[in-house]
Length: 94
Image 1 (tube, one colour):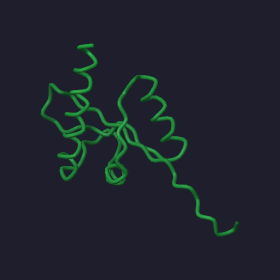
Image 2 (tube, helix red, strand yellow):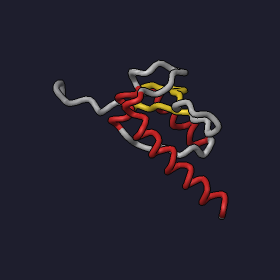
Image 3 (cartoon, one colour):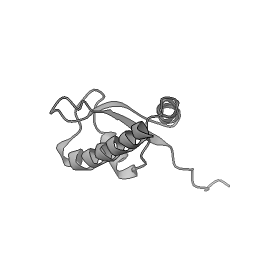
Image 4 (cartoon, helix red, strand yellow):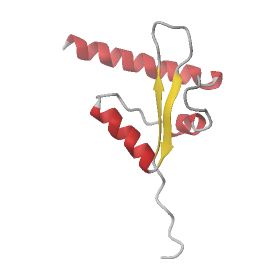
């Protein structure tokens, strides 16, 4: 079909947060298509939790690699890191 819609392209971003610092999380990787798939693959290989949030990825696409996340998404990212911290604590107790 010539007018068939293309399937949505996978997008991914990776963040790093230093709990010993007051600095905002830093964008460490971002990409679309095969690059995004590789980011997700590496996360799975290292048991890094993955969170799906299309709106957040759209914002993070505009951030340069190795830069702090923008203030307007800090609250959302802080909630995600808080959730991941709790998950990691539960795993450590098992």
